Length: 362
Image 1 (tube, one colour):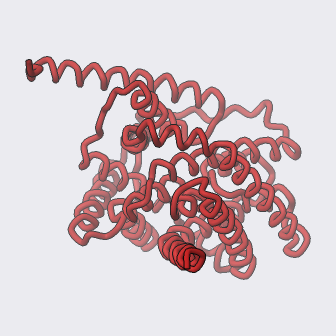
Image 2 (cartoon, rainbow, N blue to C red):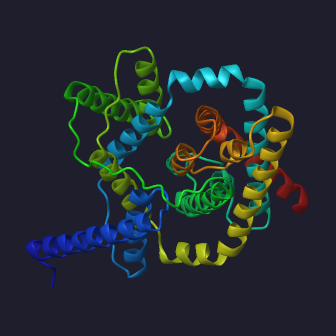
């Protein structure tokens, strides 16, 4: 006998209540552990746990696209003229530092793919240093297994944040530093808020209409950064909107895991963790080169070359005696270059791997 519509509705509502309650509990636990990206990781893990329990919840497509656009606006807000000026001032150092990290991460991704730890170019996307959420969304648009990309990207975010916190404590005593309290519902500049929402909506509509891969994310980044830096808009993103957007993205990613994917991720965990640790150590070596050849202080160099977790790096830098503008400019420069070159690099490596496989078979 078919289930009645009211019964289906009640069952779906119960699933969403369970998902929401579990997400809130996980976010609170991750925040208590000072782990980064808790508002995204908590909902994603909650959705994965429901999948493991054979309970399915799907996020509607349009809210998911709007959440991507809000994340894009948040990234655009970080692309200030101060950071751009810092990049232009020390461009040889930035090119060398960014290029080194990107090459190292792609070599590790290629190695993971060659060893069969992750399929195809999934490892390349997963190894991209920084811009974790952007890389996951862009890999989805490129037809990759974004679930495994998310597994590797967010595992790296946690590893990098823990390592950066440990290194910072060697220089700075942050035991008495309390994080600034978050005002979830601050006064809103309604005109700026309306302009920001307009950027998000236009980005979604144009991205879908023009069929641009990851358009709902990329177009708000470009449009928001341009309009902000020419002084036409001020991007206004209340904390409650960001948390809601992170949750929607996290739920959407987590809900599309499957039990076979979870088994593959668990099997790949040791090798992926080793690769991430290796990348952190290699980037530490690049930091040493900045200290020796560019006369950058050690903590500034380490935080600047840290492979991702820009939000946690920003928090650590803000409570430390470092060159904050240099750290964030290098982090942002790498994000921009990774975002622009990611698809081309993945396709190039995929082509090389395919030709190599055909040569071995022949």
